[in-house]
Image 1: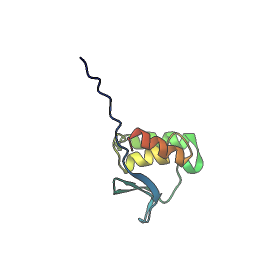
Image 2: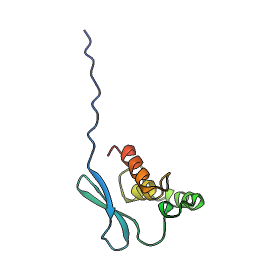
Image 3: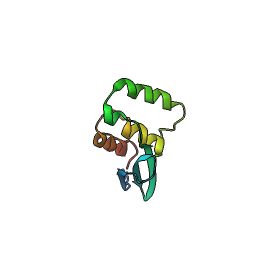
Length: 101
């Protein structure tokens, strides 16, 4: 007799994004109680201007120095501020899905 093992659904980890109170940083992500400040407080990002050319140039420029496969400031900037949508809320939702948060 074979026993069917059901796959367990991974537990969602606590995650939220707020305005940063750190000088020079735009946002703070809190993941499992760990704070990660990301994004420059000066300049603009894709969520501000929606310019596809600037987004493409940002991705090319930062691809060589960033590890976008892990939860860190670089991946937060890439997927939340420079994500597929100019809507930050859509990008946060996609980030949570991508990293199982």
